[in-house]
Length: 161
Image (tube, rainbow, N blue to C red; front, side):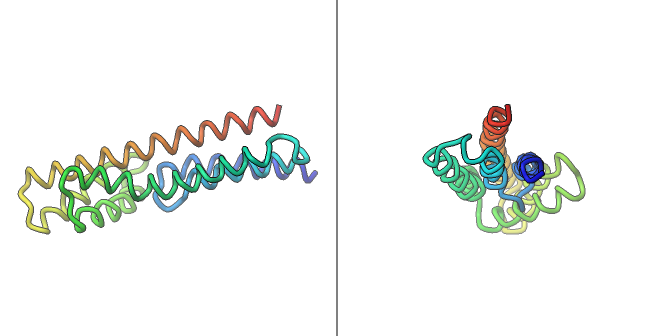
């Protein structure tokens, strides 16, 4: 009974982790990584080595920190974003998720960045370029986090079989 419960919790953590790739409030790779712990516990610690689990956990943490913050900021900064544009993109992502799902995260980040850059005094052309940079940075982060979560799903299923 405990084994089935751990497998179900592990599978749910993968689903939540995948959702977290698109929702800025959930650390997707970290939550998905937990599924490896659950399946390993369900299989009596025989599915993965400690080294593998430590490496995958470190990668999950790095992806969550680096991609959620640094890659998005780097993409935005490359296109000349100000602090206002960065904060506007974050606010836009959060608002967009609720008002325009599932694409709201992209639309919201783009619009939030552009609107805040305009309020900060940038020309329309420059504000749009910054919005594009924010969009590209966020999209790159989402794609990489999603790929990691799919890899976690692969290892989970492999350990299950």
